[in-house]
Length: 371
Image (cartoon, rainbow, N blue to C red):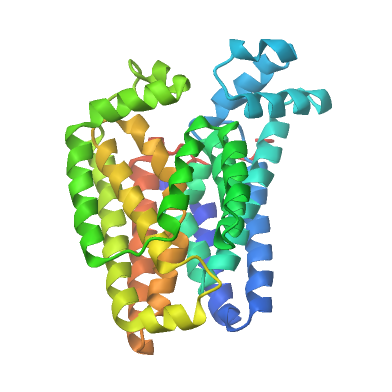
């Protein structure tokens, strides 16, 4: 365990540096400071992802092996590999530059992490806390794992800027483009539906009812997913077609806490301030629906872990929803208290998983590509 503590120290140092630097420089005071802060730390985050060894991230080695296989494929034989056309084409193009899979890790990291930094800049009132929980809630870890889907998420985040401007056709184009890297991205079309909807008190009740139905009828949901996304058919008899109550229930509890906390403080201290000052950001209602969708995915994922993959499109909204909810609190002392509580809790969460469940994400131990 001591060896594991030493190996994961790079993540702990990064999180502490984010907090100390952000607090000391009062980063959230001006937009310029926010921009410079995010530029610095997402350069570091992207560099760590780019320079990681193929063993960092459970699926990374599989993508690296696929990269080598794709080098021998003709453009008209992409059906011989179980990847979407866009990802396969990316690998094929990169092979013209270098046959080394490290190039795929480098380029995919550039496609995945800068859009997250841009999303935080556009959507969060507290970029320090957003960056911190991006790491501590293992969203960073997940993005170093599911490469194809993380690229799709990055594309969706860029497309949100058009959704905010009611340019739905442009957003649809981004969703379709994301889907050629991971078919499941097509579910993000639902964002258009709930973008203009109000999240009312009874919506939470409807969410809970949907969760119960999803939990009971998960087999039908998975069958629908297989019919819609043929690539999922191979998961039916795999290790992903099983339940993982401990891990999923752990993440489900965190999602529920974040959702309820936000619902309470947006509606009490912050709803007027939200409409008055944050109207250029993603709306309260949109974020509430997104976190609720994440909750639904986690409940269904209690039955079959592969269905958890859909939550990745919605988990990213943790990093705007939670900091903005805390920002809404009127009393400074209460805001500080909640920040300390969430920072402490999520740090503990990260350490527990890194030490006792490193196989969940495979990012511990971290190794550089030259090691």
